[in-house]
Structures are given as structure tokens and as C-alpha cells.
Image (cartoon, rainbow, N blue to C red; front, side):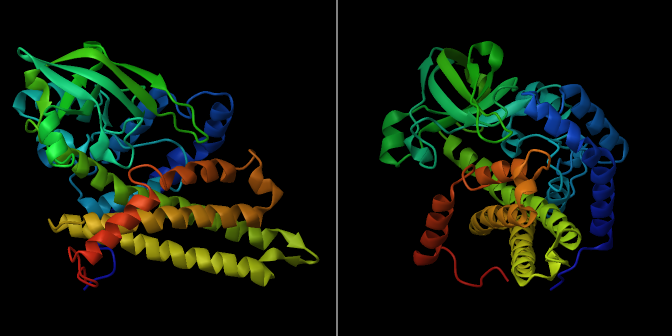
Length: 392
């Protein structure tokens, strides 16, 4: 058993950390100002400029296979990179990547969708959630009806990340209603690649946080047969694979943000004086700092274990749910403590704490709510799908 990063992993971590501190953190005030004015935190031009700087430094396609020009660093490194980038709220992402399920594309689809996405020429999004089917993904209603060599899609998807900007969507729709009902939603649904120009439209959903997801409206949108992603009626499996990957990534984001926030609290506690002493000498403050540090480390190892298990080619869904559940809740507790330590200043928009506070609340909802994660974890244990301690 080895519980330390390799020299190569440590080198990549330090390089990413340097990039974040040099290129991203100096933009934080600008991002806060833009968001207060109702603008995107970063313009598309600025994001591309930063991505090219990262590419020059060797960071392009962090987990993209080498055959597509990526670095293919593995999932543990993806977790480490995510933690480092999440130490700032600047909305940056490294270029050269694509959604994990897009690699199921056939050769023609890869040329038309996968490669342009990796190269930054096209933007994609994934859509399964509907107004009446959030956590209960088996309850989706969007239908796709065969008409000659095309499928006609009708319905609505909601809370779709990236839906306002996407050039195409990978959307899940029912293609065999009877089969869908007979299998409790596990079969009879298909994933389609649908270009925006085929006729779907997006409507922004304004939230309490910095993100603006979208509703996607499909009204008699005609999609050619060749735009089926993967197998006909095999969309549910693809949906689970997309969601499963996203879950432990949420935990990694929470770890990175919480580490930065806790360091802010430590620095402030040393400087802030009340009744003649720095508040760092007050037991109440010390315990908040101690509890936060312990929880961050626990979440970090849950995330790394989920990533490591995936790198071994093993099923990590149980661990992904644990990493997501604990990590998201840990992040919420830490940001709350950090705001409390900062007092009134933490509540103002002069500091980024309140911004992180609003952002963190979403971690417990998207990609599977707390309640869904608890249901999954308990079900796996009670039905014997997972044994206690089996992941050592």
C-alpha cells in the first residue's frame, strides 16, 4: 500500500498549482465584478487565452487518450488537478477534453463531434434531467418516434449544464415505451447526438449561484438514424456512466475549494483581534479550524480512492457516491464555518466567501442529491452488492 503521490504526480500537482496561482487567482476580483454586473465571470476570449497558455505548459486533454492528442494522466491525476483548479472560483477548465460517453461514438461521429469538441471547435452538453425526472431518471418522458430514416424528438430537459452555450447535445429519450415500462426505465431509452441547428432551443435558468443552467425544448426535432450514440435502446447505461464520473469529481471540487477557504480562515484568525487577542487563540475558532481540516482530509481520501479504483478498471460507483455525499456536505460545512470566522465581512460581496457559499449549496443537489447517494450506499450494503471494507 502506498499513500503518497509519486514524484511525477507531485510534479504535475506543483505545476498546476503554479498555473492557478499565477494565471487564475489574479483574476478573482475581475470575476466578482463581472458577476455582480450580470456578466459571465470570464469572457470566451479570455478562457481560450488561458487554455492556450495551459496548453503551452503541457496541460491539454488531462484525461484524454493520447491518440486524440491528450495527456491521458489517469483518474487519480484528474482528481488532483480538479482539487488544485478548484482552489479558485475563476470559471476555468483545461481544454482538449470531451464528455466520457462521447468516446462511444462511431468513426463518423468522432470526426464530426468528438474531435471538434476536443479541439475546442464545438461545445457539447448532456441532457437526461426533466421537469418531472430529476433524481428519478427512470421517469423521463421525452419521446423519440421513428419516422423513416429519422427520429422525431419531443419533450423538455431542464437544469442542463452548458445547455445555453452548446453546439450539440447528447440527449436521452424513450425509443421503446413498452420496453421502458417493463424494465422500470433501464432499457428502451436511447442517447442521440442532436445539433442545435436541428431545431432544439435553450432557455436560461437563473439560480442563486453563479451558474446558469438551461432548459432544452424539443418540438418535432428530426434527428437522423446515424446520430444515435452507442446502441439503440442502450442510453440508460450511457447516462449512468456520465453521471457516475461526475459524482466523484464534485467531491474533488469540494476538497479544493474547502482547502482554499480554510487557509483564508486560518490567515484571518491570526490577524483579527478581539478583546486584546487574535481570534486564533479562541477555542471556538480553533475547533472550527480543526474540524474542517479533519473533514477535508477524509473527503480527499474518499475522492482519491474512487479515482484510484477507476484507474484499476474496477467498478467505483459505490465509492463515487460516498465521495460525492461526504465531499459535498463537507464543503458546505467548511464554507459555513469560514464565513462565521470572518463575521460580517464574510457575508459581504467584497470577499468571495458568500460567492463560494452559494456555489457550494449546489454540490449537494446536482449529479445525484444527498438523498439519492444515501439510498445507493445503503442499498448496495443491504443487498450485498458491496461488502464493508472491500475496497482496501
